[in-house]
Length: 461
Ligand SMILES: Cc1cc2nc3c(=O)[nH]c(=O)nc-3n(C[C@H](O)[C@H](O)[C@H](O)COP(=O)(O)OP(=O)(O)OC[C@H]3O[C@@H](n4cnc5c(N)ncnc54)[C@H](O)[C@@H]3O)c2cc1C
Image (cartoon, rainbow, N blue to C red; front, top):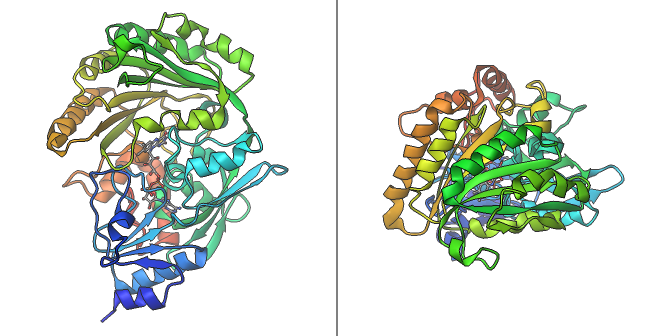
């Protein structure tokens, strides 16, 4: 019989953490405190060779396999129970080549690792809105961030990758090496292999004009309507989120607003700083209770919202695409925003378009190019006795938005899989038939036995 513990202690160059290890509980913890997986082995890798060994040993064991980059998947896709987790948290190096305008980053890096390295050269690529998120899952699923309308999604910045395939081969994906694999990695998730090294295009970004406006909740409808009417005119340099939040007890929040529901307009202007102030004038002129916009280094913006998303607390996200911020959507945001049971929860409307919309389906597997907005219903709470209240409020809101929601889904904002839905139906619904068919054909080339299935899973054709 295959002896997993022996195999991983003798045939693996990385570090294997087994259930009897003192550090097992901290090693198995992921960002979402609702996820409680107990892997049989956590295989901490330090090199592509370690990754290949861990894949081979897992295949010989017949156990399930999960791959953990930054561990932020709200659905818990960075871990599994009873199987092997390939843990990339020891592979976080980032190297910058300013002459070529390219950065390479190991598969377990976070955006804070990445931004710190690239900002030293006043360069950046689109990352997420929170610095603790892994570059791995975020890029492979798409990657919505503060530079997206000017420079595209994180996956649009991906120009190459070193990938460890299911058979242990280490291959390169790139426009001249394997363009099909590169296409699949740009949005197709972790279905095709373990990315040991990502290669990104860099852009000149030093200081940005960024921040947040806060309005009282009784102005929610007016502010969202003004936002909706204004955004079609904004230049690509401006990426924006409109959000229903609860104002936090921070020094920059007026005392009368602390703990109250509020509307926030959060944004980043990545062009000439003087023009940023002018571009934001229409929203800043609406007499907000707090105006936190100003010039700041890009990495400061990247960590500005980290406090709103602490590790280890309870999370449930559910997202969708919209072709417009209709009056009906705004009504729902007002009605359900008032009822959010936790002060840590929020409704986010990400303004898309710009460079995101100019990428064709022949260039990436990301299924949301036509959306004017991506929404994310972010439920975050602390108390486990409040699980049902928070889950139910999120689901009611999602149900109300369903008639306005486009058919495809953003895989990085998918809720955990509901019972009864087949993995194929879930992935097909997220990608749409055309993209799904191409992904399935490539899955049968790169992972015909579906070794990589702890993800929004594409079935081999
Ligand atoms: C607080 C918070 C903020 C977020 N903000 C944003 C945001 O601004 N924009 C946005 O687009 N999304 C955002 N997300 C969603 C985020 O994109 C996904 O949760 C993403 O999967 C996280 O990547 P990760 O590597 O940290 O996750 P993990 O849990 O480690 O992995 C998620 C999936 O990606 C796969 N994967 C990870 N790394 C690799 C790799 N190197 N090779 C192969 N497969 C890999 C895993 O197998 C798994 O299927 C946010 C999530 C959270 C929790």
